[in-house]
Image 1 (tube, helix red, strand yellow):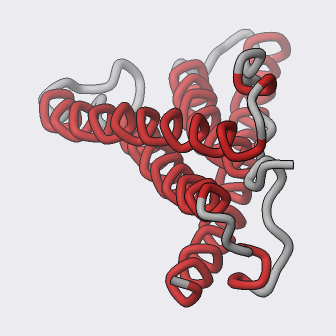
Image 2: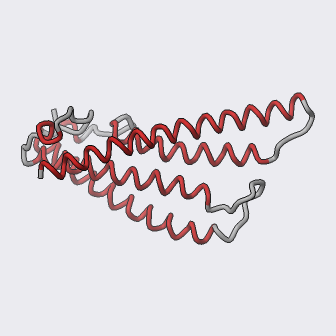
Image 3: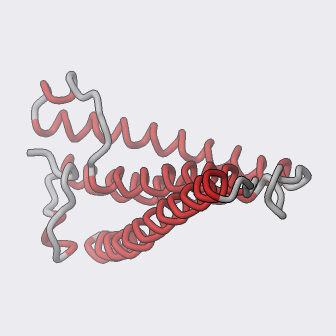
Length: 181
């Protein structure tokens, strides 16, 4: 069990760094596209029509990919008013149930998103030389990362239920929100 947790922890660490870099890169690309669009419209009395669509795609994809990073770090907004009132072990069990249901939702999200990619391949983008499936790829990547990080958290919470020491298994500090206090 310890080797499995260590491998999942390392893989999740690597994907978190890549996802954070990708989300920042998309936000910078969005900022550049918006700035270029404003500059051309304001000072050159022209316009690049593609900047609006490109910036919208970057925003959506960075939200999904960045949201996956925030999920792993435990920085998303949660309503845990009932779970906080439970004891240590009951809280770990409740978290396992919640994470399991989130995993099921993410599997359905990924399946439906994957089938939507093929549907949208037939539709041309309004202003870009590509099809409408391109922004869906970033959403699928974000969903897959969320699933990976949810599985990682589920394993940590399952270890908390059985009172296993996950920090000793990974050789690193456990992520915020992963172990019951």
